[in-house]
Image (cartoon, rainbow, N blue to C red; front, side, top):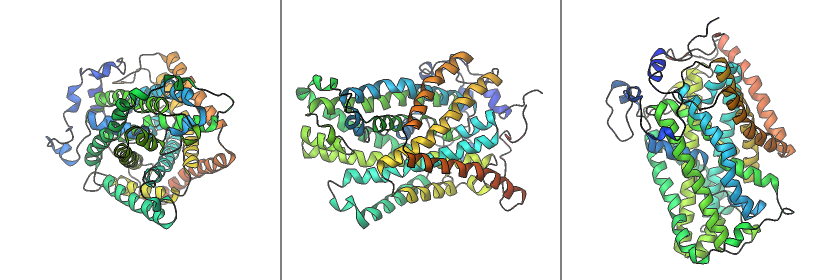
Length: 496
């Protein structure tokens, strides 16, 4: 049978105006497709149409910093890579692994995100290629991985403050601080992407500036020989790879906000391109300065060590700035992840995968129920340690990425003529080859996971496998109300 259209005809008509074979770098230059932006408004501008008057859209600069915080947020958290493997492998890891992992993931996000410009992102990609059941599994694993990831940021926030406020190191004060911080940041997420986008810009600039100052101060003290130190007999491969993987993934998370982006056919690829450069610089430069300007003691390279380096190089004023930047950076990462998680649930509800209440928005345009669900998960998981959080979220994230790669290749094979405003300039064979290196990295990360992480993650996967049939049963029994947005293609309908 003939394939049914996957998107509303208005989308297809707009997308047909765009070239489908531009590279990610070429998307930096403005070209065709301006007509598709007619219904959108940049952050900070007044709406110009009834449609945009309701919810403002995210323009390219706020989008860059939202992606930056989805993926990175600065060098805070990369210190363990030096402890695990030494300066040389830490520097090479954050310079080379992006080409193996980050670039393919960002390119796939650009292609599929512009092919399906709606909230839900990777859930819609997998649903289109493999069916709604597996789309739900993708949504469940990615949402759970995101919530686990978000549970880390209040912990890291307090880790950088505990040297200034020792009472926050443990006990009741720390627990209360985690709860209060989660509530405050959740409220900021509730107030809308307009606030989150501009806050992300401010936090990003504030978080990176101290390392630029640190670089200038460190020039007379640099010892380039330190950068080449490596001891193959003293490498903790599990910690090293988990640290690299955690700090360089989540490029696809922004896809769940595509429906909130101004003219996503152009803005999304440009945002991913700029954010990729910003992320790599934000990791490599501070590591270069930190490892080259102070005597090497690998055991000291743990969370928060950049604060100590700042004090050694610049004194208390730079220490204070780095601590404040680290704390605020974790706030930015929390806000970006919370937005992604909650809009993913909204996108799934708009496609009838979740109950209708998840699709309802607040007066600020934010999915209130999705935010409350995600915040509850963060609070429940905040008791986990840093290493446990990283390992658990990496394990679940790997399963989701495998399905994304399969969906990407399958859509290339099954729908080669489907309009793609941005298309990676490779054929089917090239698409398959591009997915092989990151897939091998995924298999390594899965293989090195501890038995505890494997068991917990597999239980989470099994819950998702059973949850989807239970939701469909409750829909048939009318215990819960499910609705399909009439402007979206119903992925539950047969399309073969």
